Length: 432
Ligand code: NIG
Ligand code: FE
Image 1 (cartoon, rainbow, N blue to C red):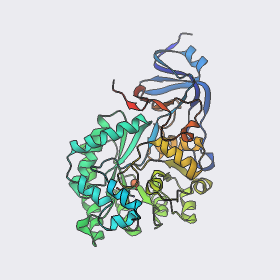
Image 2: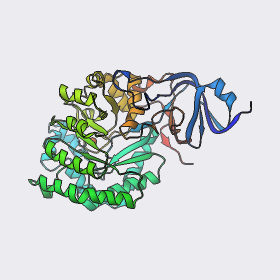
Image 3: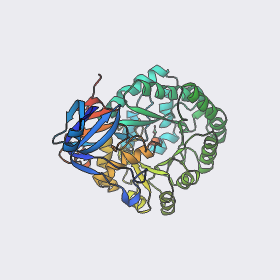
Image 4: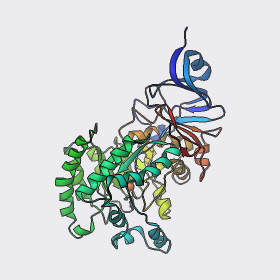
C-alpha cells in the first residue's frame, strides 16, 4: 500500500492527549478528565486539520509527510483555549494593586471612581491602531504559553463609538495574528461616571443604541456570526433585572450570551444564565447550592477564573467539585485584565485550579481545551486532537502531562502549533 501524502507528522510523543469529545460535545460532570491518552503517539495533519491520530508505527507507515516533528520524550496536547479575557485596555492599575495590599477592596476602589472606570478613562479615546498595538504583545505571550484560541471582550469604552472601536480592534488583531480571537461585546461592564445614579438609562443605551450598532458593525466587518453579549451582574454594576433586560434584548437580536456572575455577591445571575440558554456563566465564586444544581442541569458552561481570587489575594475559589457533582460542564480561563488578574498564562491557571479547585491535572487540561472551546460554541472545531479538529497543538518539554499544574512560574510549553504551523518556541512567538 502506498503511503498517503500529508503536510506534517508529529510522532513518537511519549504521551499524546487526544481529549476526545463526548457525544460530540463537552466532557460533563464526573466524566471530566478523559484525555484519550496514547503512548508513543502520532498525529497526521493536512490543510491545517488533524486527519489521523494513533500509534507512531501505524501512522509512520500510512503517511508520507512533507515535514516531521519528533516529539520523543515529550507530551502533545490540544492547543489551549482561553474563553474569558479583557485584553483591550490601555494603561495599567499598578497603583490600585498597591492600594489593595494596604487594605482597600476591589469594590471600594470601584465605588470611588477607580477600578473599571479608571481603565475606561485610559482606553476610551484610543484609536483602533493603538488598541491593536497594545493588545498584540499580550496575545503573543498568551500564544507562546499555549493559547491558540482566545475570547476577548470589549467593555472599556462604555459609549457606543468607543465600544465599536474596541470590537474593530479585536477583529483586526484576529486577522493579523496566528491566534484565533473570538469577540464579545461587554457594553454592560460598568455604569459609566456620566450615568451615575441613572443606571437604567445606561441600560437603555446599551439595549437601544449599542446592541443594534454592534450587530451592524459585525456585519460590516464581515463576521460570520455575531459576537457574544456579556453583562457584569454584580452589586455596584448591573442587577439581576438589568442583566435580564440586556441579555433578553441581545438574544432577540441573535447574539449568543455570556454573563459574569457570583464574583462577589450572588444575585441570581447563574439561574438566569441557565434559563436564557447562555453559552457560559463565568466567575462562580459565591454561587449558592441551588444555583449550582440549576447550572449542572443546563447546557451552559461554567467558566471558572481562578486567577481572579488569586490576583485579589482572596481565599475563596469556584466550588468546582460541587459543580462537577451537579453534572456541570466546567471550563477554565485567565480573565486577563488590568484590574483583578493580569495573567497571560493558562498553564498558571491550571496550577491554581489543581490546588484551589482541587481538579486533577487531567481535569484541568480538558477544562482549558475541549470544554473551554464549548464555552465559545467551538467545541466541534478546536480543543481536541480527534480527526477533523483544527491542528492546534501544544508540545510540552516534560515526560508526563501532569507536569502541567505540578510546575508553575515557568511552564513546560515548548512548541505551539496553530493550524499545522509552528508559531511559538520556548516561550517566544516566532514568525515564518
Ligand atoms: O472579570 N468583573 C468584571 N470584570 C473583570 C475586572 C475588570 C477590571 O477590573 O478592569 C473581571 O474580574
Ligand atoms: Fe471578566
